[in-house]
Length: 149
Image (cartoon, rainbow, N blue to C red):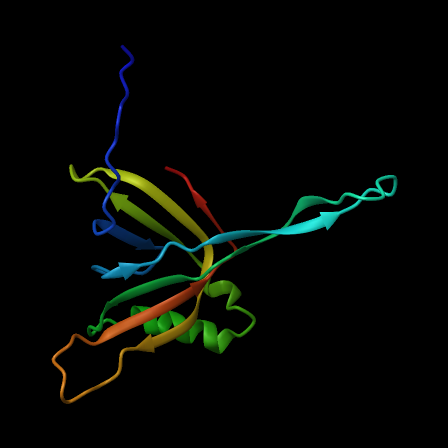
């Protein structure tokens, strides 16, 4: 009788974010960016009927980080550094890692985001009739992303 090793899927609520040079205690939410590879149709000169899809340019979505607004100005200052430098803030680019944590506390999955920089900063807004936590959101553009674990 064959034995199979079933592994339960990991839950997405245990994670941490590492940003080079910025110390943030915790994020409430982090999105894993999508990766898209364009399809380019190609037809050989000797083939009168059929075209074949070839892989084209790849593109990466945005990494969105959300946390409750605190006294820390680190994320805002990073966004301002890019704004002041212009051209994608070449010297402000940082590597970011998203790490999924298993129930036993070990690191199970790791996505490395290379040369990220803030492309959008926003807060959830103020409302005198609400008791919700004020949320700070930073959206990051990147050169590329790899899953290393």
